[in-house]
Amino acid sequence: MARRRMVYEGKAKILYEGPEPGTLIQYFKDDATAFNAQKHDVIDGKGVLNNRISEHIMTALTSIGVPNHFIRRINMREQLIRACEIIPLEVVVRNVAAGSLSKRLGIEEGTPLPRPIIEFYYKDDALGDPMVTEEHIVAFNWASQQDIDDIISLALRVNDFLSGLFTGVGIRLVDFKIECGRIWDGDYQRIIVADEISPDSCRLWDIKTGQKLDKDVFRRDLGSLADAYTEVARRLGILPEGGNGKRGPKLVH
Ligand SMILES: Nc1ncnc2c1ncn2[C@@H]1O[C@H](COP(=O)(O)OP(=O)(O)OP(=O)(O)O)[C@@H](O)[C@H]1O
Ligand SMILES: [Mg+2]
Image (cartoon, rainbow, N blue to C red; front, side, top):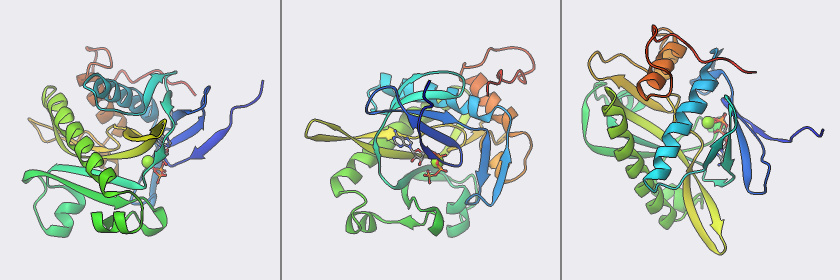
């Protein structure tokens, strides 16, 4: 049997050629990186949890008409996705001050923002993913003004939906990042949500205790990342209730 072709290996995921044209298989690794990959570790079970959590969120987005790349889960670590042309931007939506916004602007972490704030970062590891404005994006042809308008509207719809989803399970959606891509329907281009939506790409705080349930646990050495992600999955109803919350997913390699 021929071995499937790897298309791309990133820090957290691997893309393989999919079974049909226009599809890819997204494999979720256990690797965790932060600070532009200066900090790295392998967290048993993280890939399994992110595969499930991203599936859960993308499926829900589909059900409310937010176009995204998810087609179906294949196994514990892999999902079938629509291949798209990734727009080289990280689109960040913030509801509460944290991370780089707090640092750059001197706003205390945890301060609610008067309205959701959207920021764009140019995806370039060598440059450390610098923040850019819409002017840069249009001038350097990374996306058109129409694309940007579509991306903003998608990002705000995702924010509204995710905020409600997480509030319902006692979690505050502080901020998150999405990536978008282009697909073509004949001559028409559409922008869809791609990549992943998981505790790797969101800041999630327990509403009652303020406990962090996202990648900051790893960035700031705050305890077990797998336990935090397991808790998110459990609250979303993805993992069975009961037990001590440490049941961990069964690993497949
Ligand atoms: N539907 C899709 N079609 C094509 N590429 C995709 C799709 N969804 C995600 N990708 C890309 O797949 C890669 C996923 O790998 P990973 O997240 O590990 O990358 P990374 O190390 O974060 O690096 P970078 O995101 O800077 O390329 C990313 O490059 C992402 O942009
Ligand atoms: Mg990535």
